[in-house]
Length: 285
Image (cartoon, rainbow, N blue to C red):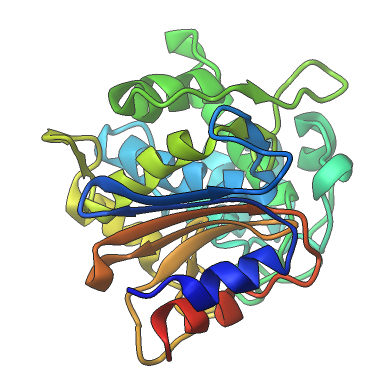
């Protein structure tokens, strides 16, 4: 896989880090002038992909079902004719009916998110935003109450610790809680571990973290947006349909390309970064 054109594109878009793993090994790494392998970087909305994986793992563990009604766990939604129809899958597909918003510094704390109105009927419209993930966090909090775990502690225990993956830090909201749609800071090689587990269809260094059949649900789009799974964007390239990636503001990305046995972490600071352009240059399509 030639990297020259893809690297040149990254360098023209304020490159912070470009790391490539192939067949389970580190194949390439390059850093911008102010970055290095040991410097944590904000993932921004790249954080969303963790929760899709955790959701399918939680379903396999019997903690929840993707198609269960959110109102089973949040009974105060039962009195709202629209909200009572929202499923957990709708939240993760971003088709729950909430309007655009709740991104970046505007992520609402969970009690505020719970009270926000739906703009459309659940399951009918894809609307990118952070509010559905905050609702999912509240669902997890209530389901995990008996175990004494927060959503983030469950994520660490269920997914990160088996990968020996270290999150350098998380953002904190004004009530002291940590957001779900954004907020993780990772070193590039740590995010690469997550990608290698995805490339391994749920296996990492001989350990099964998530069953392959469960993980596959993360890569199923919705009727409203066939290109968005549970926290992951699906391939924009008809010639390479197995590509999927996590995406964050400024060009943060974790690309997984099973047909090339490749995982790529990109960190940068460019409002004009285009995933499709980078992938075309990388894959020469």
